[in-house]
Length: 134
Image 1 (cartoon, one colour):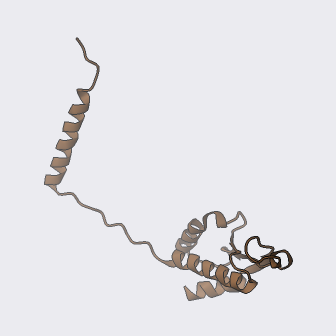
Image 2 (tube, rainbow, N blue to C red):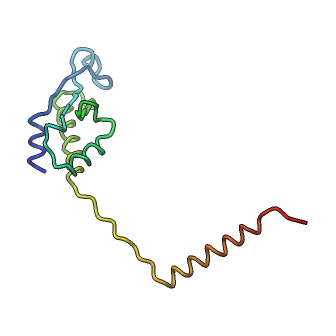
Image 3 (tube, rainbow, N blue to C red):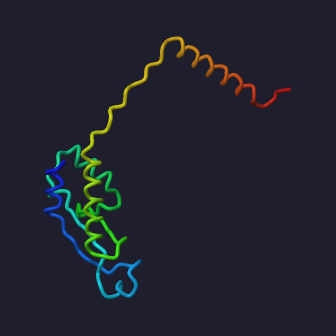
């Protein structure tokens, strides 16, 4: 996880753009919003992690294979940069985490018989709801 994050931080591109929101007149003068771009192909991830990361990224993943994270909640470039890096780290940490294997449930013979009997009774009840033939 640490190596992947270090690699992501090394190849990440930051662009500062004008932000809307808090900041008063400062918003009009200083580009405080951060657009962080990381190409997932350059991360050289194992296939399972790569696919989980691309699924988790969703709309943030563009057609060129870049994850684009916009951070514009704070008034300063530094705070927005920190937030963007944290969001990237969270996304990568979630992708690295192995999903739990689903344990198959097993129904015993008695419960299976009871379930099928209930289905049969329900079907017969529905069959009686048909058109009435005089």
